[in-house]
Image (tube, rainbow, N blue to C red; front, side, top):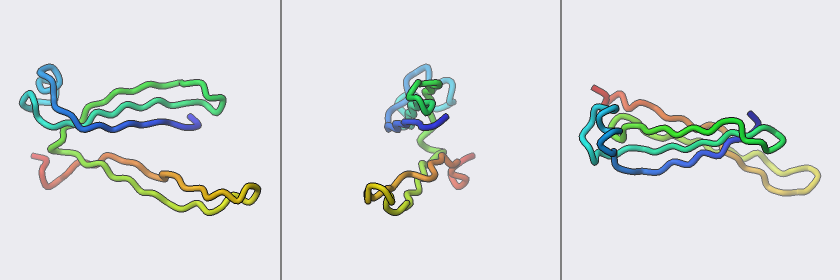
Length: 91
C-alpha cells in the first residue's frame, strides 16, 4: 500500500447493524470507508466498517513535515490515525 483515502461519518445504526453490534437501532455509530492504492494509483483494497459510537473515539495526529527542497512547498500530512476503545465507557 502506498496511500489510502479514509472517510469517517457519524450515523445511526440500522436494524441489522444494531443486531450485530448488540445495540439499539438508531444508536450512534461511526461509518468508515477506506480505499488503499498502490504507488501506480491502482486501488487494491476497499473496506467499509461500522464502530459503536459509545465505545470508540477517533484520534488523529497531524505533523508538520517542513518544506520541499525542490519546490519550496509546505508539506503536511496525517502521521497517525487510530480508533481507540473508550475504556471508561466500555462495559
